[in-house]
Length: 295
Image (cartoon, rainbow, N blue to C red; front, side, top):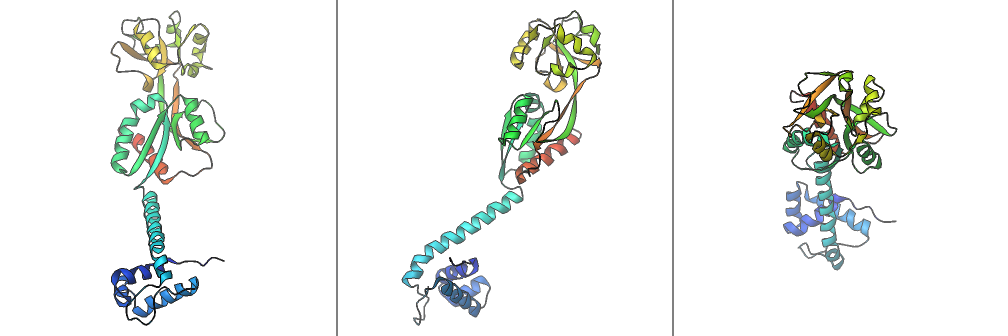
């Protein structure tokens, strides 16, 4: 059976060598000299070999003690390093958080969220990925990321969903389109116009506007291609407000008032699985940020 090596006797041995004797080691460790001597004797008994030569008046190591010394240093240093790292991780001074979001959140919300998070937790490394909503869910379920920010179209087994915000659906068209000047639109006003479907068009399903999908012959999933088609005047589309590419000056967003549709955006994580301290800090930060006046 291997002897259990306690750290205090190892520290005593190192202090005796580094400080030049038992008395100096006791002062350095804030212990009595008999306590240091007893710790060393206990260690020698556990190992079955003496560490220090006897009767020389000076603390000299035996050959066995010389062999042990660098290994004791390595063991104590490793313990202290692990302790520091664990404490830093637990107190959010270190660590890594892997998070995935849908592109609209990545471009519109995450810059502000991450800027303030980095300021509050400068020691935490962040890995941000983006993808469509199903892809984000799969990354979380597979454990590739701890947190996701996305919309859930339906309850997903194995995922916990914390609602963050509601994102209104509107009509996007070019600034010279007949619908561009409206303050809000009824779905019937979209009839007769070329509707380009996209990945978020499923939000119309089950609503009074679902009939529009049946008459749409165009489907574009890529946002860059969709924006190009809209700017070319090919047709109109429906998008959540966060997904509206507002940097494109020729495009307009008109709220869809009847029916009023929205997507719920929230934080997802694996059900029944605890978050790492870094991910838990990110979760709290996102919720606090979006609950603030800047949300």
